[in-house]
Amino acid sequence: MTIMNYKKYCLILVSTLMLIPYLSSIELIAQDTQGWRASDQTVERLSKARPETNYYEDKVPEYILPDPLITLSGKKVTTARLWNNERRQEILELFRENVYGRVPETSYQKSSKVVKEDRDAIGGTATLKLVDITISTDSKSLVIHLTLFTPNNLRKPAPTFLLIDNRGQENTDPERQKKSEFWPVEEAIARGYGMAVFYNADVDPDNFDDFKNGIHGLLDKSVRQGDSWGTIAAWAWGASRCLDYLVTDKDVAGDKVAVVGHSRGGKTALWAGAEDTRFAMVVSNESGCGGAALARRQFGETVGRINTSFPHWFCTNFRKYNDDVDALPVDMHMLLALIAPRALYVDCASDDLWGDPRGSYLALFHAVPVFQLLGINSDIPEAMPPLNMQVMSGSVAYHVREGGHNMLLTDWNWFMDLADVVLK
Ligand code: GTR
Image 1 (cartoon, rainbow, N blue to C red):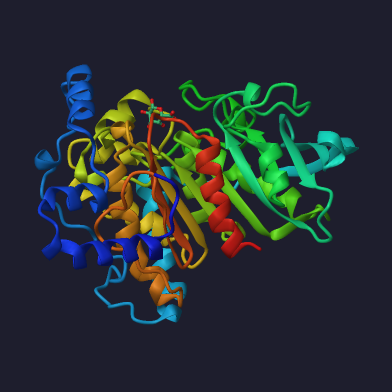
Image 2 (cartoon, rainbow, N blue to C red):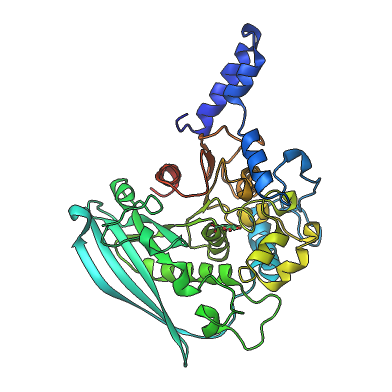
């Protein structure tokens, strides 16, 4: 099935329902229009591979989500003013305290230097810049290597995607000898977008060494606390340092930068967008647990599991909820609400049940009231869209792509469809 927007999907749904009296088989209708659900074979196969993990919808426990629009003191948030002045900050603090951790206040110096510029890249269609962003304290320093392509034929600064690369530099070859759908520069340039990328390990290596290496080694105080930042918060901070440079580059529209991440990078993109409201758009590709997926559903990867497998990603306070996720004072719909009213794309893949496509959609659904409060005309149904069909409404969009855990050109094209509406 090809891509369709939400309006078209609703039109088909309504016209199909009107046909009900004339069709002999209701099953046929259900198949054509029903929202995505995981195939039974996939559920069985994944359950066999990980018997301790729940992949069955009917085994999802009952849960109650905290209301993003009621303050801790019980006030109903009915105005944008109350959201902006009180509730947003309250939720941000809850995520800092309980999930991702706080950035230390240690002072540091920062400088950026364009170490290579080629105005004739990609057959003359683009300008390439390699930028070294150096972060230093009195005793140590590290360099974040930013690669940036911008289209040459635009008469104005380009809206730009900044990818947090968690997959290795073979996906982001500045020479364009190796091409990867994970970062499809040529296609984005052709559609009028800049493409920037940094490698997450430049900021903090993705391994647990008790927070000695990377930016932790530069900025952490000697004794870490339960709310000290983890590696995801460090990567998100790195994305903001790249944005510091991008807003100064005359080829980039600094107020139109979208931060994009896949999986652990998707968790990071969401947190970067929550912490740094200069990002005009956030793309969370298959971010799963600790990203867009509702933690309380305990479907696929759980809080207990992720904190055990990846003890460095979150703050240590998050471990308190390993066996009692209902005690968590937030859930991930509130993280998505922190992006409002800016643009937000959440997507999943049909075989990636570990990342809970339904839980991610529901998080978006339950975040939408905040977008509405802030004046965005977003309205999505509680039922999921069918496979390979995009729901786009106001500044939010969602799709489930057929296939496995990855970020492909198909996904990027749909991200750019939302960007065409909100960033151009
Ligand atoms: C998995 C992890 C997920 C996801 C993924 C990835 O091992 O359990 O949360 O982040 O890695 O980043 O590809």
